[in-house]
Image 1 (cartoon, rainbow, N blue to C red):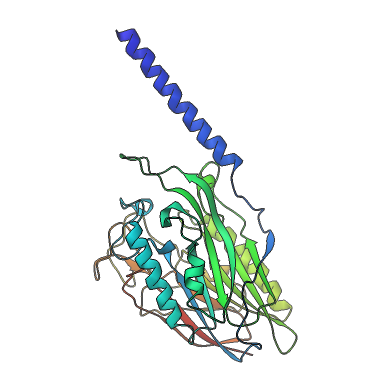
Image 2: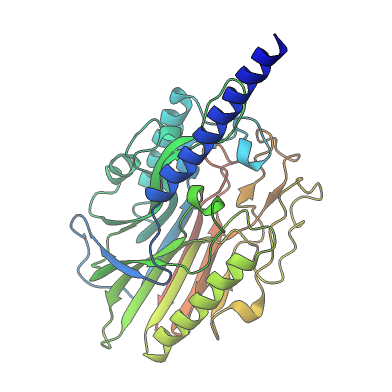
Length: 358
């Protein structure tokens, strides 16, 4: 009897080992992994409403959390328990996000969104871009893929409800006439096998012609999360510094905005909340990591990101600020303010920047 139990146990262990090896082999073979620092031209869809670049511009950034991380949600990968929102919640968040962005169509010339899904299990395989595009008539759009995993096996919980397939990235909408859109792969990343299930971090660049023959480059960024030491972000920032200093040397102007997954230089991560969230302490972006003479713009009065260990509770949940802008010489910042939505539809809040181009 004992021998039979041991034999069955051995078969089960062997089966689990084979399944694990098979999963890693499948994930490795199907891994989406662009070459570090590689560039890929991506499509510009639609027809821009404006024909010329105005002297003053407004830009909106927002990580919409794939319309699955509204105020009622916690998230397993951030210390919570929930794997995904319900289908009803996901649809409600998406409709609310799209409606809000639609209200900004006369206030923002460029809208830069992070964590937009196109065919992911976590968002019920909905292509979210057309839903948002419908609210932005006269805007063109460009998409940069940064999360393409055929099967994310975690969490290993009972009952087993894996994260599953993911396909999403960055999207930038513009009613200005962009001449080129480029996906730029960041260097650095996690080691194998962790990297198989993580985002392939990148920037999405839109280029616009200026009256003096130079270019305005507007960059949508989503930098690495979950790197406990911050070393991966340092590699990304070194690449960005070199790349955009070179653009300024050509006489071009640059604006970079998005979710940096780190607080701005000199900003206290406890500025909004003393109750630091376990497992979530954003690193600080060092001044020496910035491109030379670039200006950091953020609204210190309003948090832009919250902890997902539990659903959001005002004045209790840990909040911080990791969504902001950098701008080069030749770009004058006129105003920046975050829009306090009490994290109703995402674990991030939108930020609007107004600038003058010189």
